[in-house]
Image (tube, rainbow, N blue to C red):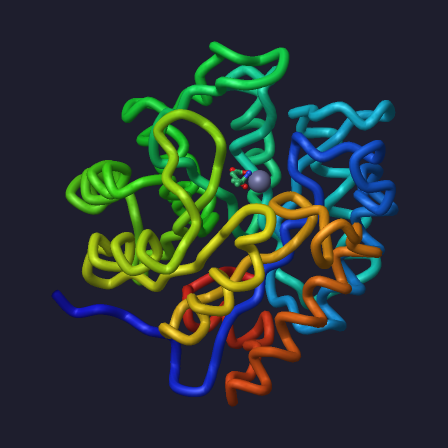
Length: 287
Ligand code: KMH
Ligand code: ZN
């Protein structure tokens, strides 16, 4: 099978700015409001990120899924930074309905996450609530993205989820090149750990014509995303996936995590791609 790697000497860094789970109590530097998200996006772009992955929060910091809030965030980010690729999350948060998780697509974002299968939450107040991503819903999200010219980043939490990637390809619901993320180390049932073996194994399942990105949680973020860059893949780092800079030391900002990954990339003779280069490579429309 032809395995796609990023152009020689290049990598892509995505900043996962906030997520749905991390609160300011966990790390006070988590951006929640549109102005904070925009400032973080600018700092991450300056540090080498080409893409910013964003979840919306309401005034109290709770995950929300209204078109108005995504509009506000979009304007705030673009007001600060014209270049960076804006990627909205359709993963949303535990309390959002499927409709709320789809609302961000009304904004026709340049990119959006597309979760490729269902997992079960097992801890905290949402234990027993599935993170539901059924095939019919994945197809509906993908169809909307195709209609709107939004590039999906397909989040695969285990090898089994490549079956749904193949399904979208078979049904012509994706434009090549494809972009798959390996999401490693989630605590949900159905996820797999973040380590070199799982990363290598996920890579074996990558469909032809797909670039890959790696998301790894907590202490695995740094080593496993670094390994992804070495293998010719992209790296996502940020507070959504890991709130620490090092063991016991909270990250001061998303940019601090991006700066380190950009520094490591350069030491490995890998240049972080600019947003314009990523748009060209993946076929992302600038908005
Ligand atoms: N929380 C991440 C590990 C999404 O937002 O659609 C996966 C994620 C999914 O970022
Ligand atoms: Zn996310």
